[in-house]
Image (cartoon, rainbow, N blue to C red; front, side, top):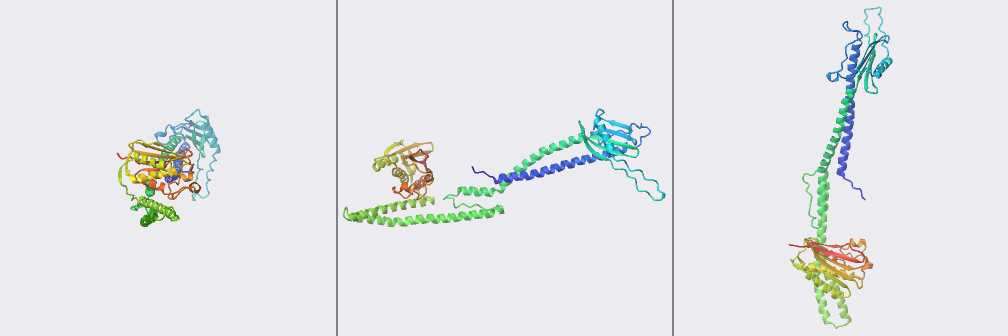
Amino acid sequence: MKQLRSFRLRIALLSAALAGSTLVGFGAVSWFQIYNAKISRLDAELLNQLMRASRPPEKERSPLHPEPLSFGSGTNTKTPIALLVLDANGNTIFQSNSLPTDTEVNSLLLGRLQLTPLPPPPPRERPNPSINPPPFRLLPPQFVTAQTATATWRIGASKFPNSQVAIAVSLQAVNQEMATIRNIFLVSIPVALLLVAVGAWLISGGALHPIGQLTGVIQQVTVKGLDQRIPIGTTDVEFVELIQVFNQMLSRLERSFTQASRFSADAAHELKTPLTILQGELERTLQQVDPGSEVQQRLSNLLDEVRRLSGIMRKLLLLSLADAGQMSLYLVEVDMSQLLMDIVEDVELLAPQLIVQIDIPAGLKVQGDRDLLMQVLQNLLSNAIKYNLANGWIKIHAEKTQTNLHVTITNASKDIPASDRDRLFDRFYRGDPARTRKVEGIGLGLSLAREIARAHRGDLTLNSTSNSQTAFTLALPITK
């Protein structure tokens, strides 16, 4: 099975993929930037608390109770905080933990103080006090993120000349805020991708509108539709050349078809008169020669060929008129039941060896050209006789529906190859020469019969039948 591909769908999918990769990248970068900004602000607050905790206690405060800790606004007052203050010798001065039972936090604070380098010694006094010494700078505090069994902590630790301070702040609030931002991204990005895909689908549909116009015109291009052209109008410049080439192709096809149709009609019309004269002269001469003579036999053969040529000319003229859409119909009420009964009588005279079965209800009437419809039925019956088997049969079935009249003519025959079934209505096509070499004809009958049926707004089709039989169905509309 041939894989179907949609250019419009690919545009929509590629646009969504491009927008999706951009949005995902933007969301990831934004998320990390927001997270880093929050951590940086938290580190600044930790640094401020480290500096406050390293100051000597005020007189009204006990050395074991330094100032209370606070981070940010009131929304963060419930943030778990742990503080550990040691003296220069490692003795505990103050230990504050909002989670007293969480010994892991205290272990983390002690571990960070052990890893924190000692501050440099204070500068000694110089012999020349007039020269200002360089300013004394402590080592910057270190900030790390550590994980316990219950929470994630941001730890800052620093050593001062007279004290060692470590502070841990829970990242629960930060993680909750980042989870909220992540959920917003997870919802907004798919919605944005859907909007991009729908927008790309609509935009691509508008951009491909000229292609749709081309497709519509191509579908309508028939013998009667070669005069159609696609207006350029406000078409995008990318499609102007394509439309111009297509319109030029239609112009060439229309010109070529008109010339071919006119040639067939003119040739048939010009040959009609001399063939009629020749036929009349041969008939008159044939009456003047001795009966049974060799000359009479030759003249009779020539007269048969002239009549055959006249039939070909009539069919070609009708086909050329049908191609040009100019087949004129003399519409009257035609009694198809009576017409079919007349055809059956002809079959019994032409092929008495064949068994004819009929199922023709009375009163089947349509609006049509009686002579042309008679020609269609004669052609179908003629083929049923020519291609029948020895001592074969012919079935004629007619039925009426609410909208159409169906006439089906079936005959016993050899199996028709699939390649021939597709080409039976081609002009001058007679199938396998081995099958038709003894059958008279030129291969125009079925083609002309179908054109006559279509001129009546009906159709002629070859039915799918079982082996050893052939069936054609003529469908004609019923005018109420």
